[in-house]
Image (cartoon, rainbow, N blue to C red; front, side, top):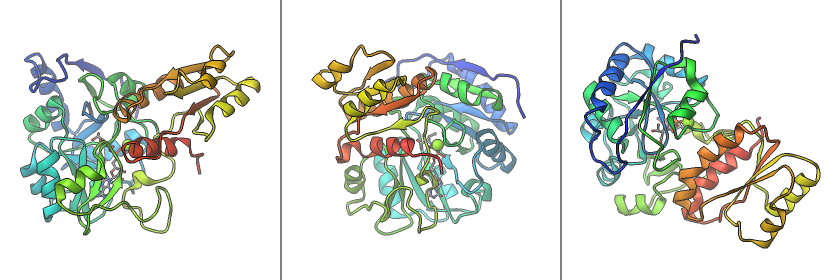
Length: 352
Ligand code: TXA
Ligand code: MG
């Protein structure tokens, strides 16, 4: 099952440019070729890198599950070029999905809608709904348009590991399991899309992400709900298995203690090697610990968007350092931090 390491086709262009440069043509053509043959291509999106295959080719999609070690019960997001392609895959197109897609696509939000007959069982894990998203990355969109096919693409990491935000993370995590990596630079958003279930009324957020509940409510012109149960709680069928307890976790055990400075002092006193992600580098408590043996302080941004953009790269980096523990300051319990808190809370859970 292990293959030679994949080529990484690197495409340089300013992140704000609407169109990929001409030099991207060859890379896109090669990726299209691999996808047509049922292969796996890692692609950049604005959220995280995705591991893409032709969503209409069951065999190819089975390859995604194998490469990731993903349970067959966890459905995949299908990436589309536009609303027309989304509708061609949906069994119905609810008004709420239309409002969200019209307002935010291309962008970091996934709509769950009734599944149409073209979508293979394996994509939806046998379920009656399908998750659809139009990514806001010119290279991804160009690829989908030129391939002329929807792309099933989960995050391009081994199941339960931290999602990749650079081509290098993909190579490190999935290297000899995939055929090709398109390197479109670091992801702008840095955490996975908001997933909203539009098959229920009012629509429900299944996974918090870069777009907030307020954003969604403004688009649909009505209420949008959070799930009744907290993330990871059992008692209802797994509608978005990304809500399962352990997910997005680095190999190094991660803690998010209520009193991080105290906890770090304790761990340092025990002689442990610690990486501490904190936005409070000017805080006297933090300063008094700086310089401790075996302690690496990693300053983090104070804005939730910038924090999100950086967090996975920091976790990937710290995982290479042979630390005993990663400690993260708990982000504020406020709406703008919801997605980041969600990811860190999962990363902090012990395996079940
Ligand atoms: O930003 C993103 O969403 C990235 C990029 C690559 O697009 N993709 C991503 O995919 O995060 P993945 O597979 O790692 O997470 C998809 C989430 C999972 O929690 C999955 O259970 C949920 O979406 N999901 C997929 N299809 C679903 C469906 N039909 N109903 C409910 N949840 C679904
Ligand atoms: Mg994932």
